[in-house]
Image (tube, rainbow, N blue to C red; front, side, top):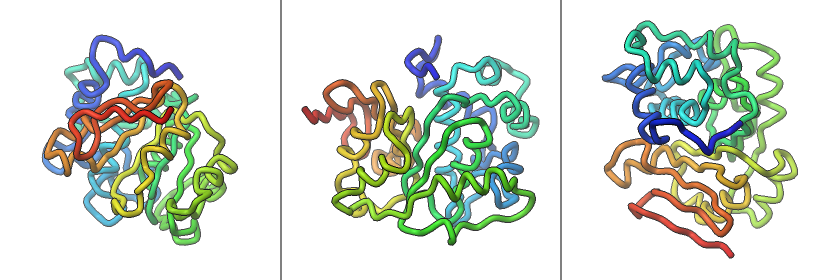
Length: 243
């Protein structure tokens, strides 16, 4: 998947436009993905493990794709949160070729489930095991088995955490993201992300905007040959060098 060229709009602006088109303007829930969350609820419906951060993660991931269907949503004036239906995006596998890691997915990994239905190769890790995952409604057994297989129960503070992730998932992620994770659990966050991302891969900190008191799609980093560059967390502009 080519994520280095975002067309006429930059990545942040693409994400903002998508959120405006497919999410409720008040709650930021995405009703069009209700059939793919695995809990028979809209994505980002303000419940534990399925907050609006999941909506931000999904929208940001979609914004990275140059698939014609995504570009059509961004440019169309006839699509809104009430008419949007995710089924054509699922059938077209608009995220095929994208490798995604969700850090701290929780017991309802709704974001990960949605992007898996969209064709991405998705991995998750959390302190909880997949046995604690919650499913409800009509959820595909095919995707359930992938969810269990591609989940790693892991404490990110373990010295060999990155090694364990690489053993299960490999490296070269196009996209690494986290929703709400307690900061003390991510002391080595930047170095871990740097090791897992491919060149020009992106790390999106979905809850970083709470610290910035800023727009939700400003908190992301891009992997360069020497480090991570972009906006994130408490620092408006970040350049982190690891060489």
